[in-house]
Image (tube, rainbow, N blue to C red; front, side):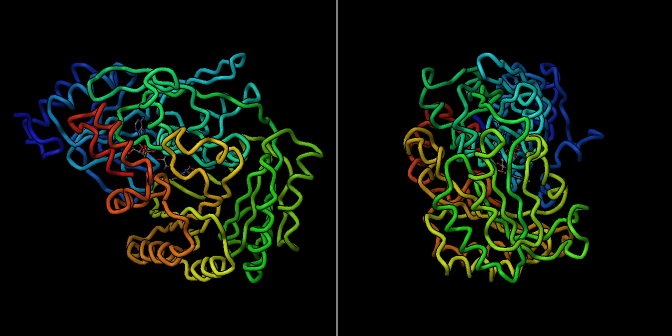
Length: 471
Ligand SMILES: Cc1cc2nc3c(=O)[nH]c(=O)nc-3n(C[C@H](O)[C@H](O)[C@H](O)COP(=O)(O)OP(=O)(O)OC[C@H]3O[C@@H](n4cnc5c(N)ncnc54)[C@H](O)[C@@H]3O)c2cc1C
């Protein structure tokens, strides 16, 4: 009778597992006594303090296969780490095995075929740097330090998603090690059900070791809007912005943030850290007159405090806000999808933003549609193709004494926005464990049952059950 998956291990079992992993892996095996144990168990969110038994820092696919094999033998709790940026800290687990891919950094771009193969430890900044050498890009997340793995497997919102789709929509194939230790290359043609599941529902299916992305022509310079409006006019600006999103072409991806003015030398100092409405939009095509006229409605929302619109290198755009989300600070996020943004919803957002616990806390409204909505609802496991907006409530703070206040603020603001939601919550913006438990159906929506069936085929004994349950 095998031990129950995820049951606590004895000290002797932890030691035996460590010895076995060390005898097989090219990469590093870090146990509780290792001098870099605390570094290896830390994730981006400083709120997370989990103490795994072992971290297997894999150097390649063969290491992942061995880690999976050893996990089958000893049956510890298993978590998988890509870039370590999931706000819920699901990359690490207590008392189990972390299969850590963060050292797997290979990227190969084939400019003729317009594809890139990237290993699962790569971040968006690293992938963009390689693809932009050829004036190509795959649509990624908005912060360059985030991992490509978790983001793509959960869907992937980005600055050019209305033009090129979600990150998962550009995946041509991926290499995955399933619970039986088999290395599979999955695509539309090969194991299509697993390929379907991995694009938007990719939690707990196996360990993805690399992605093959299709690339699009973009950059090196892109055109965008960045306009900061006075907070006193928040509701008026938001209503005008909402109306402008109705007619935005698919080449334009607009977003709106209720946030603090950054301490940027390009902005007058007296405005720094005050509240504002930030309008951002990116044109997913060449710079020039076409971009300027397509973006104009996003710029013409009344007199701004500051207008920093213009052109900039795509890699600079992708990393422009990374410094505002430093590693090790404390974070909590929750989001809703919404089909409409009524005047009342706007009033509710402004009301809750006014009560934000810290200047680092923000509310982001992203506009979906365009290429995101052109993918059929059954074509991938991402469940919210038809939603027009995603509204994300992001608390950020430093002082542990504020934990309850900051998390409470985000949860209350999310509750207040429930009546305006079209249903569902985005797995990649899911805070602690709550979205994975009682809100499981909300995360994967109508696809949850099909995902369960797929997991049962590829992981009948629940080796990755913890990864499947957590966001
Ligand atoms: C500052 C910041 C900005 C963000 N911006 C965006 C954004 O613009 N758009 C967006 O869509 N999201 C965004 N996110 C959310 C982001 O998509 C998720 O946090 C995502 O999980 C990050 O991927 P990761 O590899 O760093 O995650 P990790 O924490 O390493 O992984 C999260 C989970 O994904 C699964 N996973 C990770 N790697 C693998 C793998 N190789 N194989 C199988 N499963 C794996 C595991 O279940 C793991 O627990 C942002 C997050 C942060 C912190």
